[in-house]
Length: 389
Image 1: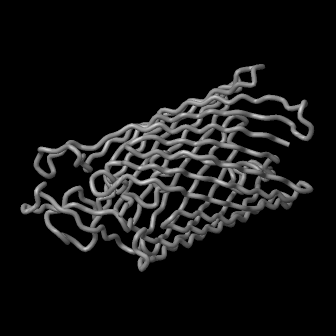
Image 2: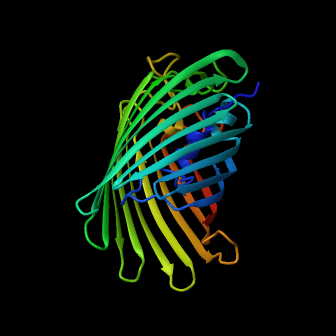
Image 3: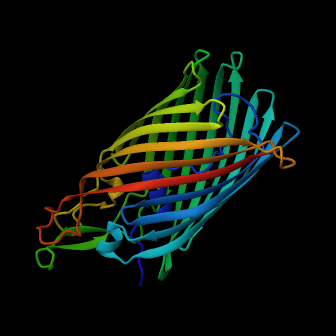
């Protein structure tokens, strides 16, 4: 039986790659205006650590009478995994994840409201989520306050075991405050709280423990996580417009949760439009640092060493360095009736992962716990084609 060693794969994709799929969020960051009518086609790719994720995504948005905007998004992941988790305890696998989203936004005066629903399906995971948000402009439209709430209800299954089925419920609370400080400076403050309850671990993943009687000196047993998790994150973001139409971006974010993980990231970016060419160039650098969960260990001293057990490398202590670059080209579409303009964009991120307490067990001939620390590189690619009408 083929057994997946990381579940669901979407969590790797979002956490490790840090990819923005499409800007389908209902709330405007800085002003109460409806998003433009548009159609987006995206190809995304992730390749790193034995994991490959590729697929298309399509977004269509249409407004009515300057009051209502509706949108729909279709997104597919084609996943092939031969990661270190897979090759150490299971076999390579392939699968497909399909996601569908719909939503609408409503504008009334300076108040902006949005409601959306998303369904995601894998062979052994079903996710349903609902989101509502509202934002309001104040003080001469210089300040925007946004509040949103999301509720998720997931079903976890296990391939090859028809009797296994568990539920996961999560709630997300978010508050955003955006302030136009000067004509050149915009600052955003954000708080996000998440509560998870239910089956929160991977039904396939295993931990390793010392076993002198085993050929390798260690054996494996199933992971066991707490059934609740609460997390909070605070972020400050700023954008400063330079005199020559370029812009600098800065983000500082802090995260902590009830499992003992503390993390922070810092990101700096630069956007530069090239006059009269339709080209815009973007560059960024991001650093991320995380401590390990309280119940994580790369190698436990014995079987059932404690109440909760984890060896998921995403719960280990690690750092990432990301270098990103992108280019966008905007062009007119007078030749195509009904369309205003179009844009093609290519973004690429190179990410280095360095783990502090997760070891590469594929290296043989060493005593358990003496294997080299694991590290790998990954490449994230996003190609967008957008049409405005």
